[in-house]
Image (cartoon, rainbow, N blue to C red):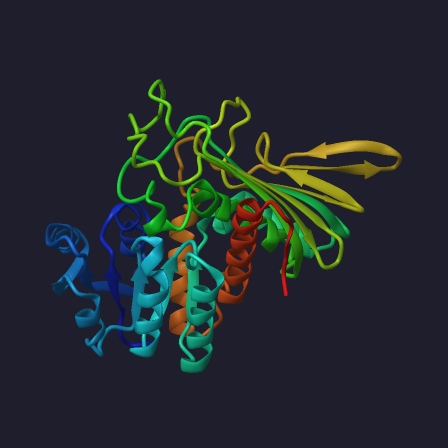
Length: 362
């Protein structure tokens, strides 16, 4: 692959493809988008015209796209229900796959993806771009350096005051498998587990709420939602205990009467120090018998007229490192085994909320 560009097919040309995947891939010099698929032909045609390489093709059936043996990589940007089906087919067709989060709507579907990647030897990663933010990378390096000691308590937060997505199939439980927990809570949980480097859950307790779905006085950031179509939860919360005794509290909401709204952030507390993302990244601890708080600076210190130190975006960094992994045959940053654990925990929280009992992992 050294002497040619990596050829990419996009399956699903809706909001996440246009907002994240295609603009980010366009900035990566060693790849080109050569195929676009969507069940709505106009969307695929528009994406092809804007992002396609010379001779790029348009499809309405992903199975036809996968027949093209010249395609190296597929990005799956469809509703959650079809993630597993399309990813498995793409891996079987000898393609590397970047699948948008969450990995799948349940752990059984996610396991199919994981097993197929192992069997075919193709690379599989899941789109958790929050890991690739400057603050998240710094936090991870501090954790790896042992700054926090043993992290035994963490909070994963993805709270919106009133920002319910009103487009696509976000409100459709059949297509998505859930609401804010599986949509944005998944980012916060992934970031937390990654920082802790802990992927062995023991049990969890969860609650989900449908308290604001039927509101007509909404004040929603993206316009009025249809109460009759809002079939997923408006908020969900989980309490997770890991095998080593560590505790994680997970908060997620699209609509919650709170002023403490923050999205895709984590707080960690260890035996030596702690960190949060409440006001930028803050690290706290005790040194020389005195409490301290430090805030890393990520803006750079170049001259005012020089933007050469301007940071790479999280989605841009994710795309670049993913293509570098494909071209070099290296393991991706976001490993499918890690995303599988996230899906297992989300499923456990939903199941606990449904039964009213703790959910124990095997």
